[in-house]
Length: 198
Image (cartoon, rainbow, N blue to C red):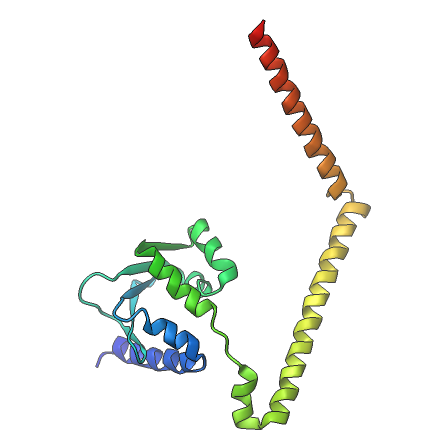
């Protein structure tokens, strides 16, 4: 067994253990049974082939024949394909290139992006329910605090740039400008129509 084959075997085991944490994703991947999805990592010359079957996701370094779809991009861009918030931006920016069955590629990305793992439940197997729930509350609180802090910072920065530095226009100024542009466009169209009649 070559080193790439050993790496693929280890990756396959890790991916399937991760998928076992979300039985719904596992069932959805089983519906893609027999399809070959290739990931070409830019700059490395390496291609991985993922083939779902009813029981698990197989990972190969070689594949005889043409894959059903090929996703090509940097490791970071390919990793972000599973995130539903950024995956469409990845495609339109050209960071990830898809050839072949694009619907299959999107379905695969959607399955990975919608995985819902109850990490608190997984932790409770090792620490017990009380400790796992406490850790979960701590993480949820820290996440809420971080989100609120970022939101407040964003509002403060916007206000500073608009009110203090006057670098950004306020919403009403933008709406007034757009309204004036619309009115001017309509006036020009009316004038053009009058000139054509004359």
